[in-house]
Every structure is written in structure tokens, then in C-alpha cells.
Image 1 (cartoon, rainbow, N blue to C red):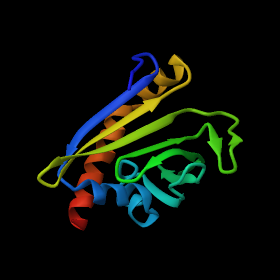
Image 2 (cartoon, one colour):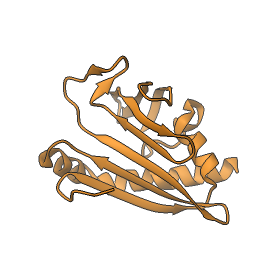
Image 3 (cartoon, one colour):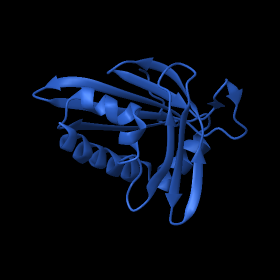
Image 4 (tube, rainbow, N blue to C red):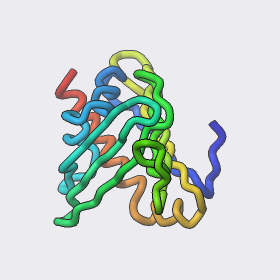
Length: 155
């Protein structure tokens, strides 16, 4: 995948959990709500339909403010790749103010470990800058650590 440093933000981690479990954590609402946003924020609602065009909808409580994120999956390769976006909502309806498309990959590296990579693409450089300044690396890094802790509890 060719990355554009002006538009793409990347986070890669080696996670001490098998990719099958990480996959379940990303694709099953009962798991995603436990790790997806940095604590003390939390996911209060989640609807996932991991197939092309299926819903990827999450609602967060961020310091008492409700934040709704509606999107869809664009591409799903079981146990290997999830691509989702807020550019469209379910039924392929264009979103009024899209922000990003995420490409999450899971690579088995042996010993029950997985190389986890999240590439978050933006339409314009200003959106990528805003996301970086919002704390993309800290936020997605904290969520990755929470994912690892939660997944290890399931292993």
C-alpha cells in the first residue's frame, strides 16, 4: 500500500494475541465496546455488520458528550483486513461531512502474536492534520493497548 504522508496516519503494533481473537474483537459488538475508545471515554452503542456495505456504527460518551459515528465496511477479508469509512452510511448513502477511511490489517507473526496495523486515510491534508493534532497516535495507541489487554483475557 502506498502511503501519502499528507493524508495518511499509521499505527503499527505487535499484539500478544492471536489474530482470530483480534478479529472477533473488531467485528463483534459485545467485544468492541470493551476497548475501542481510550478510557475513561466509552462506547455506549455499537452496530457492526462486517461485510461490504454493512454498518459500522458506534456511539461514544466523551466526557458526557454523545458522539455518533455512522459508517460502512467497504472491504472485508476475514481474519486479515477490515476497511471502513464514514464517507458513506448504510445503504451507500453519502455522508454530509466525511472524515476518514480506516484500513486495519492483522498479520499472524507466530507464537500467538499479531502485527496489527491501522492506516487512517483522509480526503484532504487539513483533516489529517486535525486528526493528528486531536491525538491520533496517542488515542489509537491507547485503544490498541486496551485491545491487547482485552484480547489476552479472551485467549
